Image 1 (tube, helix red, strand yellow):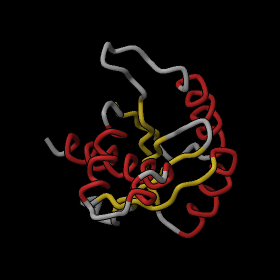
Image 2 (cartoon, rainbow, N blue to C red):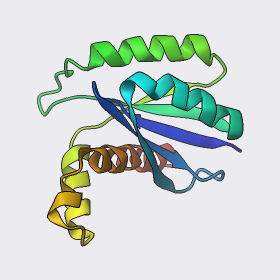
Image 3 (cartoon, one colour):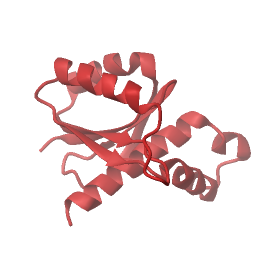
Length: 138
């Protein structure tokens, strides 16, 4: 069994999380500038067995898709061209940034650390991935 990666895709940077090889637990992995995402994935895939990726689906409370979805769809198209053997899953990322901020605030981090956007992105990716894993086992 290989890992599953989650990507909290953003215009400036992407939070990335990965499962363990048994696909039980999601852990924050990295925050990568979006322009370096493909390069990061190539390196990661060369040294890790990855069975699939989950990309957040940016939906608001009314069910409307965020404008970043256009960029996400371009990324997914490029990803499928470069890595055709790795399936891409989508998962609703509603509330993940708010949840990430809450969890970070509860972790004892100081104010400067709590406001670090890269940390929020990485924790958001972890939440997306853990929720994906839990829904998959239902």
